[in-house]
Length: 84
Image 1 (cartoon, rainbow, N blue to C red):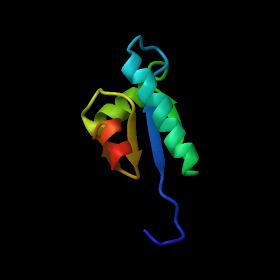
Image 2: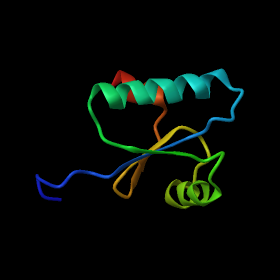
Image 3: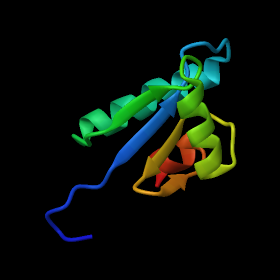
Image 4: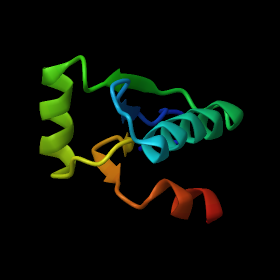
């Protein structure tokens, strides 16, 4: 990738969870990306089955949130990412 070409960042989230950890991770991820001024597309996989299937095909994981940069998905836990 040339230095002038921006990376494509996709964030897969869900709005229909009762798990406090998932809600907190989604909020923290948005805050992190926004504070670093990262441009990203966010898809709510609870409302969009096409995007949910796309996420599963890319990462073979169902945990949320997920971040994919270009074709690579970051599968570490959000706390690991925030601490690094």
